[in-house]
Image 1: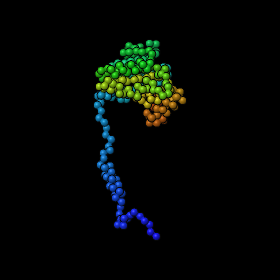
Image 2 (image 1 turned 135 degrees about the vertical axis):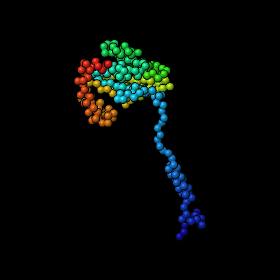
Image 3 (image 1 turned 45 degrees about the horizontal axis):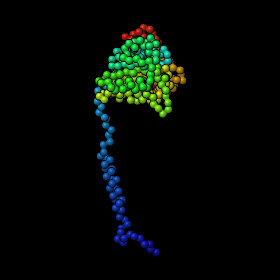
Image 4 (image 1 turned 30 degrees about the vertical axis):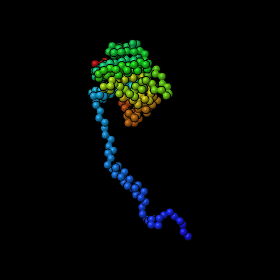
Length: 262
């Protein structure tokens, strides 16, 4: 019994199909190309002067920073801020223009020196004000840096789902704010009494934290959990916090506080 086929009588079934042969050649060519390709990731050359970061201030944050100080009333936040931005040992000479936004600016005696030395003082915060200040920074010629200090106003910011507030939006782009010639013209510092007021965007973009005074155990656990990525683990974060508390007696000594302002 025989079957009819379209195969020519002189066709050798043992020969390789010409289409398969072409596929093999293409795959070999691809392999050869892959071997010759350079897949090295090269660094991008960046003009450091354009970044406008200034001199290294280690162990402090660079002059271009987004700092958050957290602590209850009388925990030392205002004392810290006065030292950071009014003393030459810290950041006094790093800013051309300093702006304070605080509802208690003229009611708290500890703000006296900041009111005298800061260029602008506002008692009410609004997103419109913050946006206008950023526009002033962008319109300012030269390399001079600006500082915006937001003192205990973040609790008044209204957070809503699906909308990013102006402070959080600023945190994600502050490093690149400039006038077209240079970046790094703006630094921001926020003080707040409660960690819960700090949005996820703020937490992820802050360049440094100052935890002032004592915290309830439950809140400290939450803080250590959420910020543990900055300190290579929750346990290490808690141990560092305990070491810091050991110098509390030194910080509240009257003579030591007076010497801080020198």
